[in-house]
Length: 91
Image 1: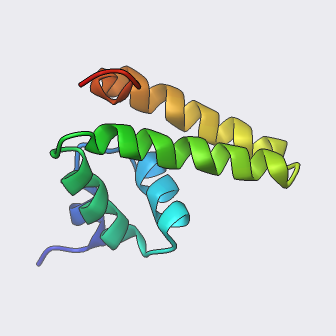
Image 2 (image 1 turned 90 degrees about the vertical axis):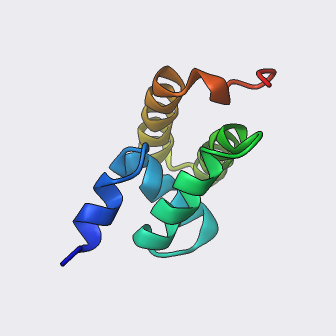
Image 3 (image 1 turned 60 degrees about the vertical axis):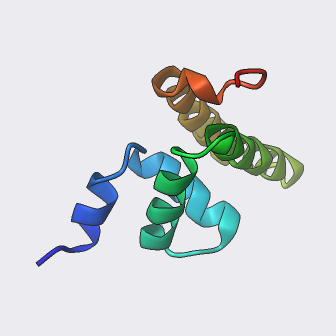
């Protein structure tokens, strides 16, 4: 039987990236994994994931939560290293 960990491991996103989508969209991790996997395979979808993480960084900074902003920044750096197609300006 497939469990939550199996679903999260089947995506092209890391657990941290899935968690960022989950928090941004206010959905559970499995739904976030499904959404993230879908977005990674559509036109401008990777840029949308990047935008979500950037918006979460801005929200954390607005709340003076520097620790969370740093963690999200590391998530963003890893995401862009793994998925250069997500860089703004890429088609």
